[in-house]
Image 1 (tube, rainbow, N blue to C red):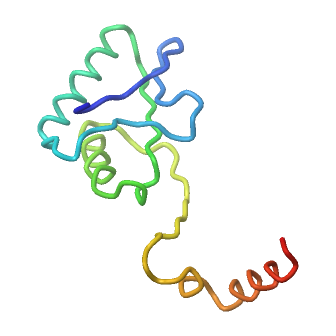
Image 2 (image 1 turned 180 degrees about the vertical axis):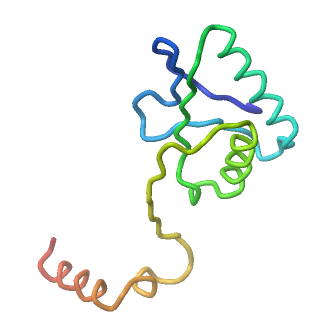
Length: 119
């Protein structure tokens, strides 16, 4: 796979994804930005040629794939797309420091209390 995107078409609207929490252009880390732009240009032209008037893409939260999301975001904005809905998200990075060192003192106490109760 070099690049791919899947759409569901309803009337003149192409949605990616139609009902999943997110879905977007997936592409190889080795894909040059120019090649990604070419892929998107051809994809959009094909959609427009079959009567699509509106294209909706719901990308994953940027922390899931920081570099690809930033590149895709810039590409789509430069192609004339706009953000119609922005959602907040949060994540905890899984790495060497203990989870308890990443959360507040109150959250540590709550977690300890739950462990004692067996919940």
